[in-house]
Image (cartoon, rainbow, N blue to C red; front, top):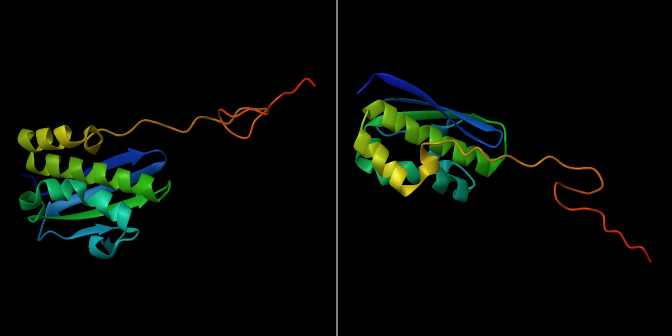
Length: 133
């Protein structure tokens, strides 16, 4: 175990930075305790890595700062940062295997991005229809 670990996670344009240190199990997202974080769906997504290893999550304090992107993008970035932080803090291959078997994106950033909009249409794929009659 290390004294303090800094990790990061990304999803679309959201970037999360997490600080994991020894403590009593407090988790904050942008200085808001996770118990009162809204919306609930995003909170449940962020809590996934903590629920997989509750005995290890009880012994650390995690502070996450997230900016950019939307609500769910920030939640996905935060959960990646938290999972990476726990793995780095405990330096445990078993813990890494648990996260990897549950969901690969807990440890690896999701590199999917939005397609750029093209001319002649409202979005990336849709085009204005043509009729020759």
